Length: 267
Image (cartoon, rainbow, N blue to C red):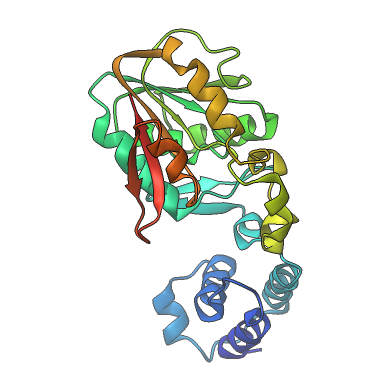
């Protein structure tokens, strides 16, 4: 089968998957499986594929049709210019979260201490460590998340990051200049209404924020002052409909590229 023919099969097969651009995703699959560039795909449409590669591509397509996210299939995702490995049950890093990283880096001073509550895949803490000389510390209650983050720390050769098990502040010691969290913030009753890629594949532990989606924020807010240095910042990522809660607390709200509330800054 020729390259152009397998791409058509991919595009046709991906058409009915929500929130997917079939053409872009088909090229990403081909680039990954064949280990070639976009330019190569364009210039070599007549190339014949071997049977092994054909079967690998069709297998990926079938998994996508069942709703499995492409990032999980490929085992990695790009975030803030880094290749973040995904292993075990960890949340896929979202582009919107890059706004959090930008606002963290903007406020970090040389030698500051940074703490992330709930590291997940390690995307945020690794991005902060890669782009600053801050001493970065992270915690998570999920062993999968800790294992995945450690894998990314090693893969990115980061020397200024430490992670350990903790249920929020439970095992945290010392004080920090910036405390950040992107905790579970989806209302419990809304989770089943999300697309199948999320409900069937992403860890509920990283999604469920309780009845009003604010459970973890409230717990962190009730304790953070014991762990924040004078003049420091508490930074959250929030859901698009949660800005009002934080405005009442006098927090600064920063919007994402879509004009929706995304990042909260508290002192």
